[in-house]
Length: 201
Length: 201
DNA sequence: AAACCGATTGACTGGTCAGTCAGCCAGGGA
DNA sequence: TCCCTGGCTGACTGACCAGTCAATCGGTTT
Image 1 (tube, rainbow over the protein chains, first blue to last red):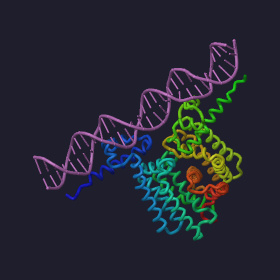
Image 2 (cartoon, each protein chain N blue to C red):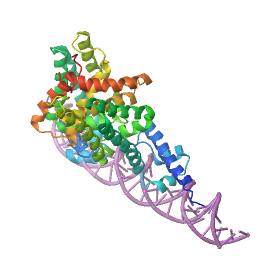
Image 3 (tube, chains in turn yellow, red, purple, cyan):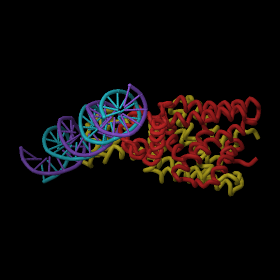
Image 4 (cartoon, chains in turn yellow, red, green, orange):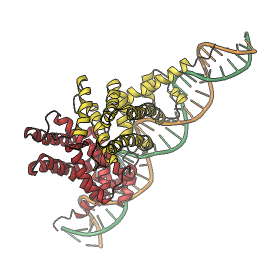
């Protein structure tokens, strides 16, 4: 038979998916490896068959998702019509990621992106790449004359990304409502806020 | 003699100050209580004489600083000339807090404000009060007609606060340079970005 | 049907700390 | 001079948990 890694792959996936649920529910630090195994309906030791360590499970989850995010921003940059549209597509991808799988995005943001002393440090280079891609969009916008030149692109990218992340954090911790209609509105408002500003034109 | 709590008070303060340094250097989770005691030049047990637990040390640090921040925003709201000036004063206070004591602000932000699964949850109500105060400034600005009305004040406060926090995070983790001249520039740029937007007027 | 092998199991171990506690000591009062 | 008090000391303990490993299972190959 043509090798059947199906079961094996399934179990690995099963563990990753279970880990998302448990990490989202309890946070990385207070989930024991046995919690992941239980949630996945799998023996304790099997987690170590597929992953070098508990950390490696989270690392894998982060890498899977972040590479998609980086690709999406880079595609937005390549295909977008205007800098504004590029920013909207980037923010849109992140918002949609949350809409599609809030638990995973919660884990990514809470345990990695904002966990600057643990996994945030480990993945700093990858996280930075997202900032840089956004900064590039801004810089190109400035060069094209559609963005003002007195705001440093790096600074602008931090402000933009910070706003997006804070918005997701607000949804995650129910500081602000996350009804389905809020998501599309949010995409538009993020871009309006950053590009047009709070003051009327 | 008129009771001399001096020594006692000094030791307590000494422990808090040492904790800031150690937390900033190693992060809360990887500092042992013995690290704090060593840094303070004090016996292990004394930490427990003044604080109920390791957590309580961080809680105390957070409360001390955050109450100042809330007071500063509320004062900015009371005394500020325009909504824009109020936002600038609020952002300015946070930036100055960082300039004045980067280690403390690093601890507050990294270990509490952004640590949504641990201390962030404990102090969610206090953190929220800051968002609310900013939202109020925005709402008043809208009522007065100087801010556009199609952006929800709560949403705007998240974007504003998120931008500020991300900026500090950038300084803290040396993603962006933090020379002394950058601080004053940052205050102005934050307000320009949020109020005027990236697109030229 | 026997050897083989990767997937799977879960009891066990070693190391790590947070928090406890039994007392020590300095200096003020009798 | 001796006691007394409370700030102060630091060795110790109990709990917790990541990661190990020897054994078992089930399907495939010869």
